[in-house]
Amino acid sequence: MDATKPVTVVLADDHGIVREGIAASFSSRQDLKILGQAANGSEAVELILALKPDFAVLDLNMPKLNGLEVIRRVRMTKCSTKLVVLSISRDENLIRELFRSGANGYLLKDGPTRHLFDAINYILDGGQYLTPLIRREAVDIKKEKVDQLTLLSKREYEVFSFLVDGMRPRDIAKILEISPKTVDTYRANIMRKLEVDGIAGLVRFAIERNLQTNSMPC
Image 1 (cartoon, rainbow, N blue to C red):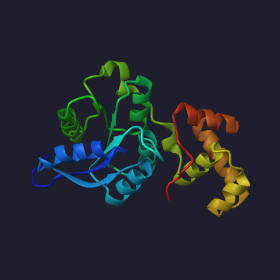
Image 2 (tube, helix red, strand yellow; image 1 turned 135 degrees about the vertical axis):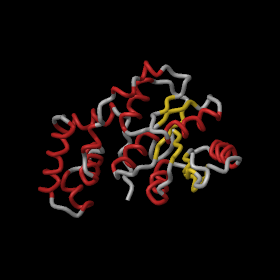
Image 3 (tube, rainbow, N blue to C red; image 1 turned 180 degrees about the horizontal axis):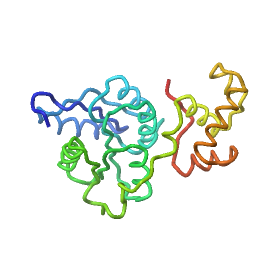
């Protein structure tokens, strides 16, 4: 780390005691600076996009938006903030999905605090950090393909979210202030990019990726 310029961080966890514990451990270091704290996923997205910190440390299970969805939405904006996920889960499929969606690091909450500092240093050097408590070979993050959702534009992602929530094209058109024909065009583009057929295919796509789509950010 550059000692002359602290690494800026946003913390997101719905448990205040966890956030404060991490903040307290960071406060003892002059090379780290907490810019803000969020109690849910929506707040996390807003803070990250507004403050553009070097790092965001995200709880996986948060209200409104989970950590995976926060990652997807931040990456949709091409924001360069490094995203580190904290969780109790050892689910290898989930971890692969997090990295494929744009996570830079994954740590277990029952691991030592030094793992978080190790992760920041490792990621700053250009790597992807996986807690040593999980075998890297089991996740094999370097072989993951690019997530198809990153191929969608912001507006396509909005339409996708409304469609899998069961909204009709004409209602989507009213909300987005576009024509129903334009919604149909977006829908066709979305299905082509995601390689699915029909609304049922879009819903399966969302379910398989543990997406939350019922509260789009502004």
